[in-house]
Image (cartoon, rainbow, N blue to C red; front, side, top):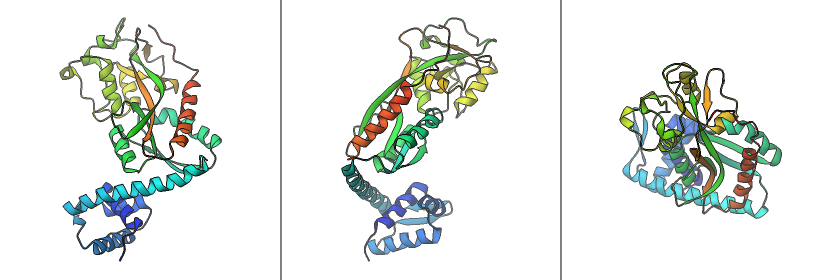
Length: 307
């Protein structure tokens, strides 16, 4: 019995999900069909790859090693398919795009229609999650290209800079946190600062903009969305830094929240498009990056804010 790519893809899905049902859903097959293919793969290799546990499925030690090799094989096959697509020099066919949560809701509503208009034969799928997961899935070949904040710190990736996303200070109009003049992000009192929970790169970028801040004085809010943070600011519970991309989407009621620009040099993050260096579709990804860059240049409605 020969090993098939389908079996390797199912094993990869099972390793990622840790559960037969979720792996089957991810692979768009029934659970019995996926289980049969995994069992046949084990028979072909002559070893146990998966251990069934109450919570779902767990790879054996050998199974984990085989998954790593299977993912390299699947990535190579994906690049072989990409090589054939690149020969036509046409932006068409399937493409998986990953975007971080602090960009996706504000960029995608404009990007998706523009891509559909510019490249009608492109079949796009979107994945929204944190940077570390996007980079891992990009390296594994599960994603083709990602939009995130640079630097990503991965030598396997090409990072195409798109635009500078400036941070503004968001304050309540009154109360103890309605601060006066704040010329620098480093002047923000840590106990007043509202941040996304750990794991979100925007939290790290905000802290980096604030310089040497005493993390022991930060509040643990456990917040996962900028919208929730805005409600807290409007209620006078603290202050935060907001990226201009978020503000350009019209997310802020300026009767409830006061926006303030910092003095130069303004704190900011750099947004980039990234893909694997080994991908033969670099020319196509550059075209996509130019579309995103064009949207950034079209942002004409900038928030009016105090200095």
